[in-house]
Image 1 (cartoon, one colour):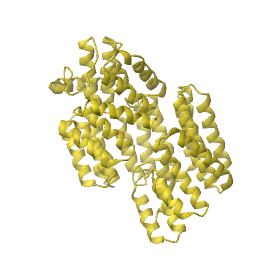
Image 2 (tube, helix red, strand yellow):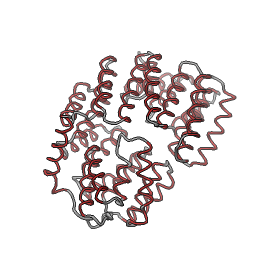
Image 3 (cartoon, one colour):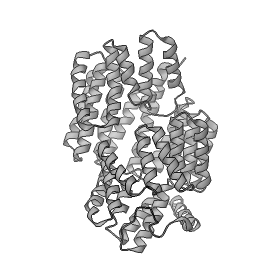
Image 4 (cartoon, helix red, strand yellow):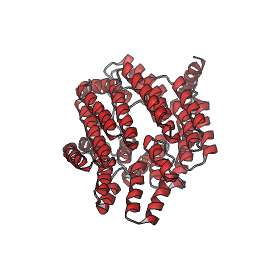
Length: 482
């Protein structure tokens, strides 16, 4: 209680300190905000400021305050839908409410709401349509330029993302969040010096907020600078003791030093201080993943079961589905294909029966089918895998989502090399999600099967040096150690 009280006092201090930067009315060339209540609009603008500073807890407080003063402030609901650490049902309720109010807002707000809705529904073609309209209407709105950068970053088109982020900075060189995303784009483009400068600029613009130090800590972790990375995460925690991302970040540092017990101490600490169920689930996910890094599959499955039970108790069905998918992936890797497929079927059945939006049902049905194809492929049940692959291809063509196609290409690449077509396998893997270290590893396997040991070793070296913690990283990292 004392920490929370201090944080609120500290946030109030920041509001006073930075109040001059908060616009009190819609600026020229920027999307307008529709509200009959000046106090509601003022609270929304303060919430947006904190959202853009990576301080989602303070942002949430002000968005909710805005809705207290104007229940029809649709833009506050749509911003609340993208706040971190919320459950699926809460996100859906905010989006649905914003959509229901879209006939009462400006044209720009209506398109913005439609964009966020289509992003939630993973409808990529519709996202592009709405984004294009926003860019046409508001070419000088820094937030629309930033939104474009975010869209292309999410789709791994980093050069385009950087172009839009540079546009954002040209419009407002003090728009701090742009430097965070620019740093991430530069990291993905292997421009580490520019990335570090971007994160340092993010800190310079927001020295009192935790997220900039957390972002630098994540960058330093990926560079293998453990001591400096932990120092960065501790700087974030100093500014907000409940900033769980930084607590988890310290845990990740210990994972890559093979100090697994120390890592779990921090993951457990994150679980204890978490203020929401989604945050607690995240901590359990990392505990489970830590056991995979350590090679303790039974404990990994036990932690994943705790995750599932907590999600079930809170009726968080997408998290229940994901827990079954994770269990299936782990079982696949241990050669238990039939048991894995049973878990993927569980995931798919829950997706069909749970109280979820149709787009979410379709997405998780697709994921279940891709995972079944993967399990069959990995365990050399190739005729059945080919049949499952055709189902997945039909689903991908129907949904027309590039990210889902990349996901499928990873599995199809493995299937191609299992069938002896190494050239096709390489082409498919090159067009898969290259941010997923598992796909990078599989490319190394294919080159090794082709007899190109030099190229295989080069790729395995990339896997060895990868310090972006994930389940996939944990599954393959030990396989490429010297």
